[in-house]
Image: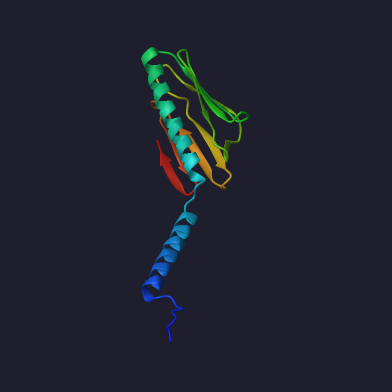
Length: 146
């Protein structure tokens, strides 16, 4: 009479348990990440880069730069005598109205505040201060400094 094996061995069971636990761990990890935040962070980083570049151009060449946040076409324009650049505002992020800012020839900016809101029920407060056009962005549950 032959002995027929119809059950898993201990090593097969352990491998199955290990693979299953890795898959469950990965699902749990990725469900905790707020993926909607990445486009917002990338936008604010791009805004910062353009702001610094245009501020430097304005100071070096002694001309002003207009910064227009157009709510309707979802773009931010940086316009001066040498170039015109635009940044696309990501879906899920917007301002309450269209806004015009000016980087003066000396690099200064008039103090002001822009409120951004997102579909993730977060509000970002972008505050422009006098003194070389410095600004800060504060999130409702955290701070982004630039």
